[in-house]
Every structure is written in C-alpha cells, then in structure tokens.
Image (cartoon, rainbow, N blue to C red; front, side, top):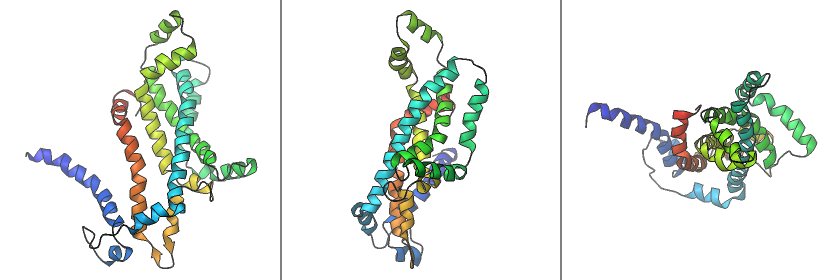
Length: 265
C-alpha cells in the first residue's frame, strides 16, 4: 500500500475514534471508567442499556425527541417548498432583502428567542408539547430549507414550467407531479439538515418542555447525583442518540452528494 493511500485511512480512523470510545464506555461501569485507561471493557455490562430500555423516563425521552424532530422536518419542508419556488421564479420588490432577512434568523443564537417563546407558549397553552418545540425550531430550519431548495430550483429551467402550463397542467398538479420529483435530491438534503439541526438543538427544547415532551438531551442531565455522573449510562445514551442521525444519513446519502455538487450545501 502506497503511503498516500494511508492518509484517508488514518483520517477515517481519527474520526471514528471518539465514536468507538463512546461505545466502549457504554459497556463499562462508572467505576471502571474512572479507575484507569483501557481500550476494551474489562467487565462487559449491559446495565446501562437495560436502564434506558426499561425506564419510561429514558425511552420516552427518545420518543419525544423523534416526534418533535419529525414534526419540525415536515412543517419546515411544507413551508419552504412554496417559498423557495417564489424566490427562484419571481422577482418582486424587496425579494433579496427578504431572502437575507430569512437567513439572519438562522444566524441568531437560540438563547435570544428562548424567553419570548417561553412566555408565548405559556400564554397560549402550548408549553410542554411536541408542537411547541417543532414550531420553535422552524424559526431556524425554514430559512435553511428555503436557502437550500432555492439553489436547486434555480437550476431547473423555467421552460419546464411553461411547457407544463401549455400542456394543460394546473399549478398544484405541475408542482406535485413534475417539479417536486425533479428536485427530490434538494428535498432530501433539506430534510437531512432540518432533522439534524432540530435533533441536536438543546436550549429551546429544554426550555419549552417540562415533563410530557422532555427531550433525551434534557433527560441525560438526570445522571447527575451526589456521587457524580453515571458515566456508563451517559455513554449508552450518547450511543443511542447517534443512531437516528446515522439512519437518516444512510437514506439520504446519495442526495447529500448531489447537494454538494448542485445545490447550496
């Protein structure tokens, strides 16, 4: 093997090292983790995973996170598709300024909006619901989805729209049956980023929930006690937190590659 071929292999191993270390820690006890350095668990234990799958507080944390993340992804795409089409096909007064204003919402830190959302949702009865977190994350994900989808839509010739109208297609029929399949790679990329940004966001999800819709990231703080953190349990929870993102990446991996080549990714 040539030395140059070793570079990507070493790079991949370097990237996988933290994941391996997290997985190895999940099969150790907290005492073993704190007791010294070891590449492999000296005494394998599944107690941490057993706790997560049998304790309702733990597994409902994952269910709650998946529910509001899925809701947010669907809502963001449904709102971003017509908006991105308008930006890509029409020119109107202030369109570039409006497009830039959308992106500035993505640049703002979540802490800026935590208190206003908390007061608003408490007043209208949405506090501690999955819909509350899903709608709050739309503030960041809809501009991102619009930005990505607009890049894909601008790459589709306008003649496609005109030909469909000449052939007698109504706009909803043309948009759903012709245009959306044409930009399915962009939709896959936008869905991936909406899912991931909503999945890893903690501040809003923790601020806007208490019991019924508490996300897994907030549940993980329960591992703190007078004796310290239950590191094995934290590691097991971290491993299970990676799995949904890995599944999404697997299904949209081809679309992500096209997104880097064609869209605004």
